[in-house]
Length: 358
Image (tube, rainbow, N blue to C red):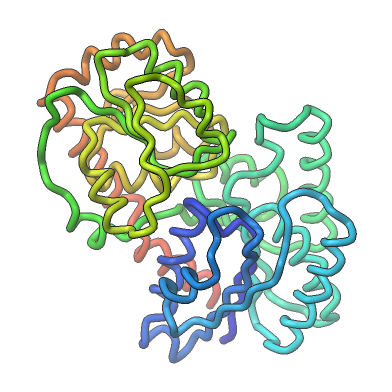
């Protein structure tokens, strides 16, 4: 069986997802029956073709085709033409599209093959949930999602429970949660405590991560140390004197070591699919404080693995609780147990493989 994955947004959590996917489907036993190709775009910041070739399993096929995030008719037509050419050459049995833009371009390309293919689509956070765009744009993206699903069909594969509920209103859907490579991450777990309570976040400094809110929180709690593991175009919003910005750390080992060094993980996102970084923090037994939004609330169980908040004032009591080391340990262990139960990437990719063979 030949499976082709098409993704435009190969960065951040989606990059980690595909790195793990390539390892799973590149396994010798699996690739004897399933040939996997990943078609991706390198137009996003932080996507390096040499890095992809070096880090992804050599047992999967990698094809780079330029795609852009926003609606760009001329560029989109070029992308569709190249995608169609690649798909004709591969002649896959299954085409799996990831994220909104690939969902549009891939469906059109699949239609232009004039051959019926088994089609899957993973939104990884619907574009119409973005809060950095106008209400009009949200309506346009909603219309695109619903109309393309109606016209071209296929099965939606939701990455989280809330996305699953939303997708039910759009088309046929299966729930296969995002996951992380637990054994790989656990080797970086070392119990420790900092002299000063240290709160951190991992990821690109973008509008989606809401660095303005992260900065406000740091200013509200000057006695705590804050760390942003990563860099990005919105880093100028992080001006509080108690925030340290590491910049890009290319070596994943150093990323996990930095993540293990914090006491509390803070996810200030405005929108999410199901955040990989939160799952990585939970695997390292970090209590998580996160905005009460889709994605975050699918990972974090408030008052059991951490806390969800709607207003910054709620953090006063939550951080007071988290000053207690034993409470942090308790919440962290609960988070790790939840990750083992629901977010093991190998178990979840096995569900995906079974879905392909249905």
